[in-house]
Image (cartoon, rainbow, N blue to C red; front, side, top):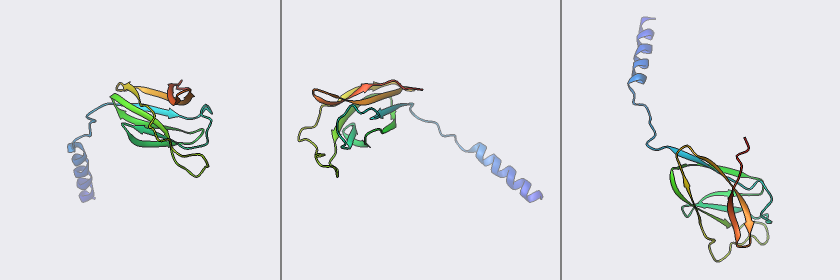
Length: 126
């Protein structure tokens, strides 16, 4: 009994002495949505963040990212897939740049315009 008590006290003191994890930077939440049927294709859309493929979206899907505060480059592109006609174009679409602040929660939705797909601000809806 006495041994288990001292073991418990020892374990509790170790957890108190362990350094606490402190985030070096604050993050923002970025939500990308394809919930509306604004893009007339069944093809998968790739989301590139800083020119790296970060997510894939089918119709009626959304995804979210925790990103550090600062400037972010976003690009949308059709990805090759199983469906006919889902071949990516030869030219990369232009990137959109946004600035995120620590603690921001931003939602963007994929929309279609005369120059192709782009990201448009959307309501958070909660």
